[in-house]
Amino acid sequence: MSRRRTLGTKKKVALLVSAAAVAGGGAFVMAGTSNAAQSPQTAAESTVCQGLATALGNNQRFIEGQRSAPDAQSAARIANREAVIAQIKVQQEASGCAVGESAQGSQAAAGQPSQAASASAPASQAPPAGNAASGQQVCNGSTVTLSGEAGAPAASSNQFPAGTKLKVTNLDNNKSTTVEVTSVSGSCALLNNAAFEQVREPGKFLIRRALIEKVG
Image (cartoon, rainbow, N blue to C red; front, side, top):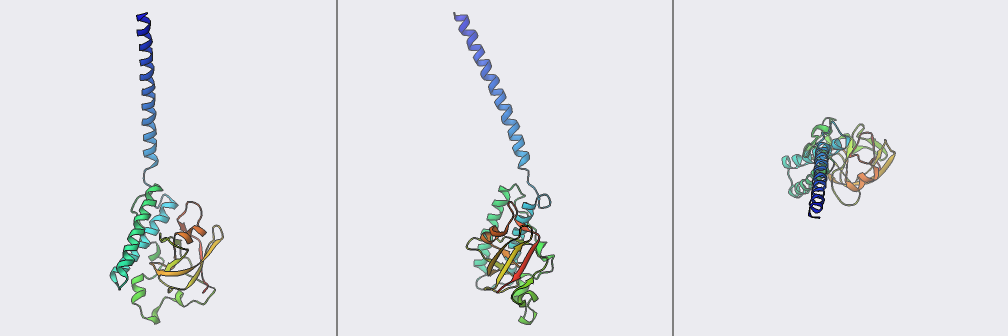
């Protein structure tokens, strides 16, 4: 009787060890797979990462403009955009992107003036887009991304004053939104989170084919 119990006990121990080994191996494989899946992607490798990198770069450029040509509200604007950058970095991490990667030259390369240059330029040298008539297409060829700011649907711009109404259409899905410019940014038109959600394609943070119209 004692021998049977001993054999039974040995079998149970062997089964438990075997199960533990399998579980351990499975956990190891899963961990390896998870780590591989979480390897950071660059903007060049992912459209999502490119959009987030562009948004980060836009906000960094805005901060640079505020620091180079400060006014009474610059400190508050900079603090707000730094909080926005922190949130974008959270989104980058959640999307498996390289955290902190920015696309500083994405809008500047299109020949659009910086916020600091616009702020210091005389009225006679204001960007042509700012003088566009209502209903006219502006900023032809510009990409559109999000500023990362919360609140009701709105836009920010370095070419249009606060109160200007812009209609932004995503030509890839024909969705559009009409928003009011409420603040200054480093590009022609940046949509805040709420406005961007109205026209975005699922999983994308960049609109490559955008139609921007001044409507008011």
